Amino acid sequence: MLPFLNLFGVAIAFPPLVLILGIWLGANLSEKHAAKHGISGDQIFNLIFTGLAAYIVGGRLSYAAQHPSAFSDNLLSIFSRNFGLFDPLGGFVIGLIAIVIYGQRKKLAAWQTLDAITPALAVVLLALPLANLASGEAFGAVSELPWAIELWGATRHPVQLYEALAAGLILWQIWPGRIQKGETAGLEFLRLLSYSAFARLLFEGFRGSSVAVSSLNLRVAQLAAWLTLAGALWLYHSRKTRPEVKNGKS
Amino acid sequence: MDKLSSKQFFAAAIVTLLLGLAWIGVSAQLPGTAANSGIPAPQAGFQAPDFTLPTQDGTEIALSDLEGQAVLVNVWASWCSPCRQEMPAMERIYQEYQAEGFVILAVNAANQDNRADAVAFIEEYGFSFPILYDVDGYVSEQYQVRALPSSFFILPDGSIQEVVIGGPMAEALLQTRVETLLEEVN
Image (cartoon, one colour):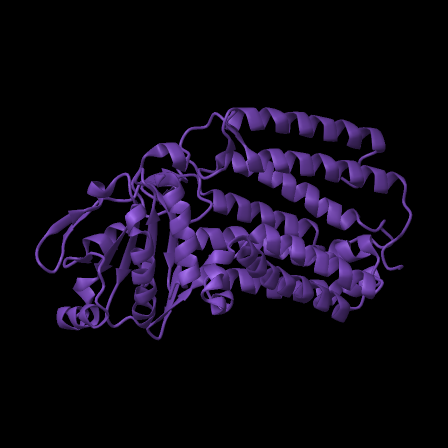
């Protein structure tokens, strides 16, 4: 665990730094390879940061809308630096809407755009478990395996490492340089979605902090991952067998 | 995925999904989730490590004595600027919600603070919630405090609902978290 970096006597939260670095590296990777999908690097960079800005602003506004009494006496709290005053789901929905609006205004084709942002998503999916490893969150279940790590009063599955290794393999597998010329648009994104859903389905089983359906004790994230995997495989198969639009053409 | 024929892909997908369903069932039985482990640790979902500390007048207060109430354990020091900024907001929230069963334990990291400075700060603002002195750093060690302020929102059953590291906490954040805690009390 490395939750803080002490630099010149100032404690800096390390996990958010890992995430920010991941977003920056991912955005640069997508920008560099966007032309393969018939989209300019600038458009991809702007798309990512439009979505990110909308996610941050939308998440805060959504939280404020859900807790108006907490902000009514002190409106300036809307600009607070507290991460806790944030609704991730609301931010995600608003970020997605912003991305769709930006894409439509710039007349970006959906599947090519998804392919173009795939490298960025893959890098962020690698940064996320590394950030969790640094903060100690999303920890593993108790285990006595030789490679178990000491965390939160017990030896546990290093599930963040499992997830980071899987995300590293996935990134290698979908690396932009490996893309086949003339491949049907959307397959690169659907590969990332399938692999990532499979990894989540597998490694969530080793987590010690899963949210579970109380009556059946099934893990919600695994159920969501299974449905995502099924949908992604179906879409992959249907696009693969009925190719319509190739990458590099809009 | 790319090298498989349509039939092979379909068969592999079905097998993967069936194995996935089986794994969901099997892994649901694995023990050791945070909620049922009962291990004391300074992390959301775990039991808050217990402690007993003295106030300025020597009265001892134990965290375990406050079971059934919503508790905010805030570790602070007088030299810590964000700590000083958030404590007046904590006082306002304490005044508003203490009648409903909300308690603040403001733990002064006395092993890295000057007692006279801490007392002067408390007297300047007239805080009414208990101020405890962690002279030997026991709480800082048990709660793995690596930055000040560090705040731990504790549910009536003694489990930690949320950890907020750093500050200052906005009054809006305090209010929403305390209201969530109090839903469990009432």
